[in-house]
Length: 350
Image (cartoon, rainbow, N blue to C red; front, side, top):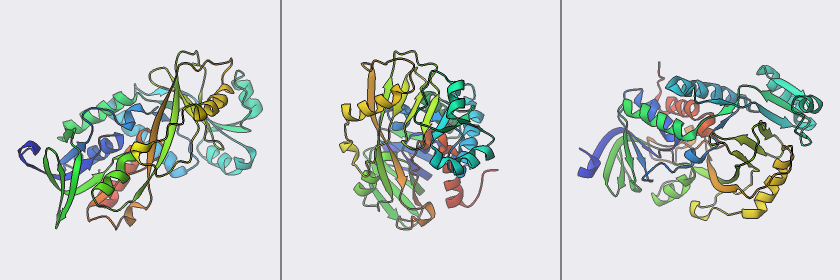
């Protein structure tokens, strides 16, 4: 019976059709489980699609580095190998942070360059903000829209059902069945996974469920119309500054800001205050003065789990929240969503 006829029965419901939701649905469908993805938007307009989709394989956390490799292989196996666009990454840091990061970089088989070596390698960049940098020659970026459509097609081939424009209105926990109510009907399943990113806290509150994630707002800027093809993928350990090309030829850049737990409808508009600071930082990596009349500022966000997945006992049985944060969608969503599913399902895909 279809949702339009009143009810729909599945093994798992995944709420949210971003990259995390699609990876989750695909992993479940590979286990021959009946999966339905429910998305409140009527078309592709989620945070995954406006992502810069940057991927660097070096991360200060060795677990994340391993998950990035696993996720990159996952995307490649889906047929996205040719869509990956290489862009050498430099993860810069100061002397105070050098000891641990140097060991991590050498263990990963990556070169560490001093400031003098960086200047010799990339003379058009001042490199005044870093003392050393890990050079990741395998880094790059993807086209987020192509990735999203490829994931959705892979899900549909395995029978995953999609319902777009269906806002979840109510959650009901009845014995061994979880039920979600939308304007279009009632969905019933053994389990529910919320992969709704920044909207998760607001959605859980509306449904009367415990708050098990936190939000952090992120402001990024996109610059087009400049010849910055030489610019590598730069991340600074201390400031958090990042700059990288995107699939549409822009430069995405920005500085993080500590805005936590702001409701989605109240995302702050920093306008010139944040832009001026980010522009000044980017200018240090450009060979000539830049005009920023063509900058677009977008406000995005991350959702972080405030408790470990195994500790989400305050949620009803077989109800889970997947909130990874830190650019997870294109860095490590496939690996981390699989690890979560293995944890809650108790069996692995062969």
